[in-house]
Image 1 (cartoon, rainbow, N blue to C red):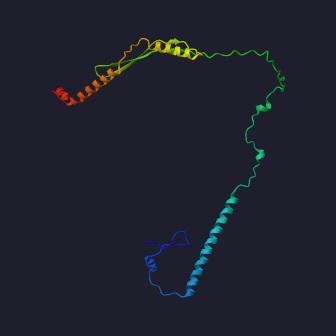
Image 2 (cartoon, rainbow, N blue to C red; image 1 turned 60 degrees about the vertical axis):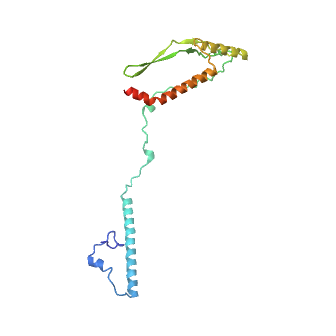
Image 3 (tube, one colour; image 1 turned 90 degrees about the vertical axis):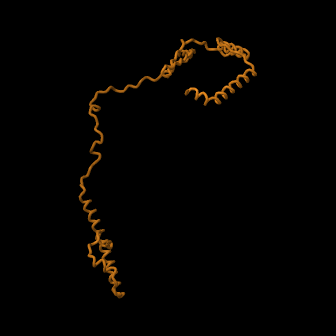
Length: 214
């Protein structure tokens, strides 16, 4: 069961079941004067409770202010940071101003040598060797050739000279390799041959699997 809310006290007062049931019982009609007197008494009771609450809060504030210490603290009389005593008792030399700077002539200044940037180029050949063991493990081993010093190419001024040096470098880089010329007709023929071979392998795939099983 739910009890009626009390507006005059923080917790509602305990009531009996008969008192709670009397709220829903039929009551005879009251006179207007009785209703006015009841409302007036309720308003006066609420005003008295509010005044008592404010009075209690004011008394609590006054008591807290009176309980604080009345000691006066002078900030100038205390050292915020402890001052080291050796600064006052140490022996110091008097200050002597240094001599004014004298301008140095430009001719007497030694000429700073221009540091040339040292840059060298090296070439090396990296060879990677792949080996497969009987168990199927693949191993890669890298071999590097000794470093070879490469002369820095100078930038020629003429266009023909640059083209000639570029051609010479290309020939030197391609030296040692063999190239075979093949015609376009031969290329197409090999491409078609490769295509037909793949087509044949796809067509006979199931047959080759059956033969492998037997």
